[in-house]
Image (cartoon, rainbow, N blue to C red; front, side, top):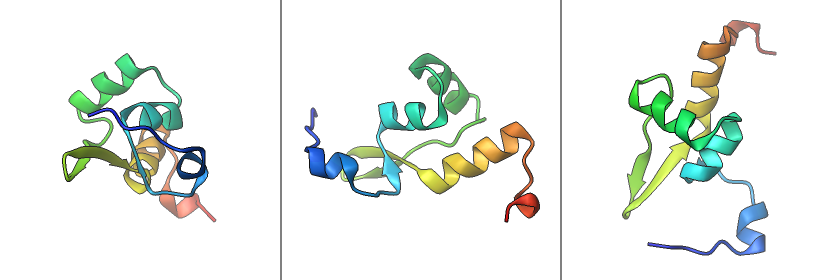
Length: 75
């Protein structure tokens, strides 16, 4: 299903990202993102009414783990 995001919706704070947004958020290519999801380094999406959504908190935790940043070192 193709969905069109309005300018307002695209600029509103949200916790869930679609596939392309999640890869951009992490800062990697779509192919690398897919590989990292498939091998478990990045989280799998949740499904809501047929839409697959990546949780920002889960992406942040995975990024912290991969980069060696410890949660206890966060202020």
